[in-house]
Image (cartoon, rainbow, N blue to C red; front, side, top):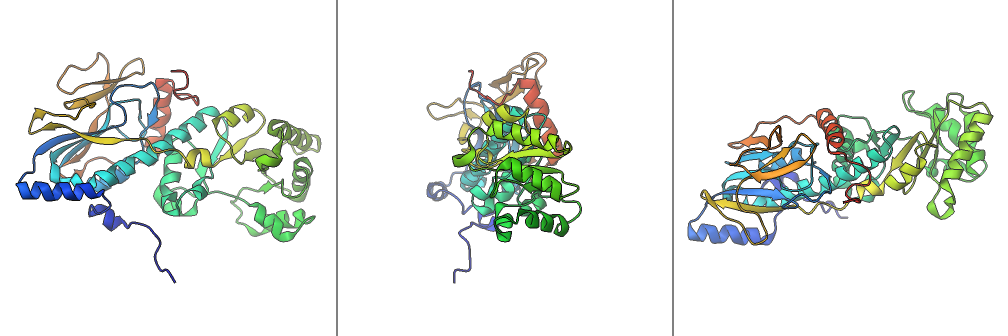
Length: 388
């Protein structure tokens, strides 16, 4: 029997072994030549502003990776939006972090993609409850990252129990179709009743009502079965869904008609910002899965821009140490660090590590509030970048 999963351990990552092989060759060559220059390196996705905003995430893990190295690091805070320029700057002997580049970019690239998708989803239904249901679509070792990034982007909760430790939040969820199927066709009431009587009192009473019968029929039956029903969830597969908006309106109408006005209606199953914009006036909340969890990682790169105090950069990259600012009109300004800042602009680069010591605290609640405020400041919408 195979005893281990195909997962790289945290110890291996910290040791620098989760690296591309050419960084091993680089270390061997530098050691042979007796060279270890002091460099300035920057992590960027785009050199100039693109108009497509991204929400920085993953900085806590990145800091843990770089901690203890004889380097100084500055970075924009988690929960800040950017559309170009550096998000992190590393200064120190190159060999201190050479082998860490692969893991560092991964720690930033994937969470940033997920958090940005979560923010798009949040923006599409700002007044609705929106939960992250998507960790089942990714490798289980990434579950905590997915859920933390989803919260950072503004989602209200998540389903992965193992992510509780990383987020300090309780996972949420009620019932799958499998529970109803276990009781058999025609016995949906037995399933809903067992759920109501068996789960902890603090668990919301939300019944899944589209397993065997018409969604309207099951919704009304569930409301009449569970006295203190909080809501019903409609998760009809796309192949059978038809006009989902019409189905939700009919469910709401029928619940009201039978005196169940206090029962909320939740929707899930293949939803993204477009669907949330269309349904937010006929549903009280949503579960969003693959649109958030399956986000493409942002294509960050790490590039040396100074060597021993001299300007240096490869072709296609901007040389020299840079600063980034949030301007008074919500813009993202990129400039050389030794030049004057724009008038009334806020510098976004802040100390992260000094001589190997992490000097910044990571508070998820603060980062969530920061993301929401920054999204308003820059005019972020669920159609991120589409109009540019």
